[in-house]
Structures are given as structure tokens and as C-alpha cells.
Amino acid sequence: ASGPAVACNTKFSEHFPAGRGTMMDVKSVLISLDREDTYCILEFSDNEKFELGYLEVRKNCQCAKCKPRQTNEQMKIEFFEEISRLMLVKPKVEQVGNYALRFEWPTGCSSGIHSFEHLRKISESSGKKL
Image 1 (cartoon, rainbow, N blue to C red):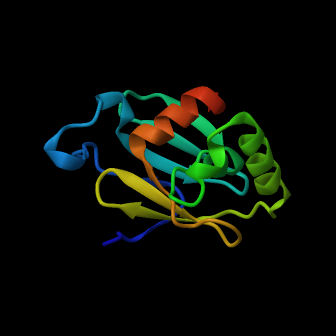
Image 2 (cartoon, rainbow, N blue to C red):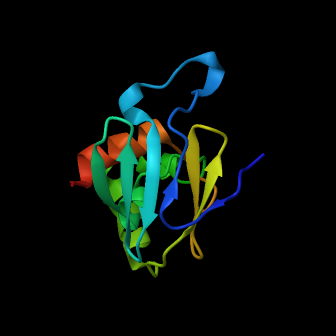
Image 3 (cartoon, helix red, strand yellow):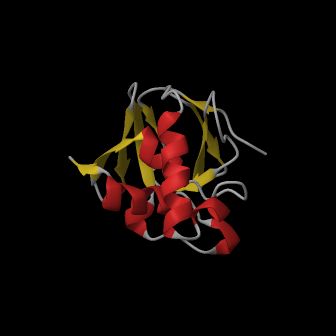
């Protein structure tokens, strides 16, 4: 079951249990999400904040439809080019359980669930630390 849609400037609870009865790495617990037109600002429980473009979120989708298209460099290039041609529109965001967000894009994939840990990884590698 999916949770409620996440509005701008949403504050999450301070502590989320990870799936399978384990606890997430404390630095990967998302505590707030501020949504702008082309990017979002994610704040994690270790007080680290990142600006992350929606294009980066899309490029790193791990769903069954997108992940196989990222298996080698040539496929990644083609996948990234395809995503880059799509109109970049601010997505709807929905909380999934206590561990992830689903970004709903008006075009392309909307089935990817991005765990807080995955969002932290993308933020560190492709985002801008604030």
C-alpha cells in the first residue's frame, strides 16, 4: 500500500524503520523534502542537506523497466539521452511505507520506488551538498 502524497516542505518523522526488521543507516533517514520546479532538497537525519535534480532521480531509477536499460555504458548513454529529451516536469511524490518515496512523472516511468538509502547515495554522487 502506498502512503499519502507528499506536499512541498514536508517534514518526515525523525526515525524510519527499514524493511525486513532492520534499521537503516542513521545517515540515510530522510527527515525533510522541499520540492522545487526542477530539483528537490533532501535533508537527512545527520543534518546533511542536498539539492538533487529530478533528472538525476530519473536517471537512477531502479524499477524493473529502467534498471535493465542501465546494464552497460552504451545502454546507459541511450537511456540517459531518452530521459533528457522528456519534458522535465515537477513530479508528484508519494511516501512508500517508512523507507522510500515514489516519484510520479507525467511522462515516462512512474513505478520506481526510491529508498531513502538510494536517495542518499544519488545525493552524494550527483547532488549538490548544501
